[in-house]
Image 1: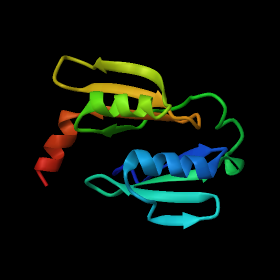
Image 2: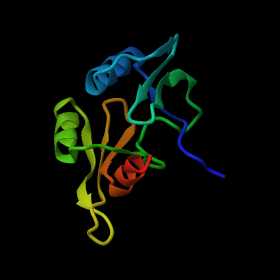
Image 3: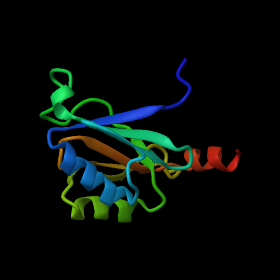
Length: 132
């Protein structure tokens, strides 16, 4: 059974540039570094976010944005998307309300390295956090 997300990894052909870009965007240094791999701890639950040198990517995982989108809860969705775009990310999906109007709002961008980064305002995330 799935219990929670453990580690999210992105691939980057220019590993050093990706590390620098995400360090600037996130405002924190990676806590773990190995040749071809860096990892950040992020958010309320200290989730792991890794960047792997693209030369280690399985066939078909780089080139065009594809696959599942993992959405990170953010407090200010509009400002986060604006900052990502100002740093060179490209819009993948615009900001839009999901469902029945109960406050679930999503957006996604493609980072300069070809990865899809999802961000959202998620009332459920906040409710779970408040209940801990």
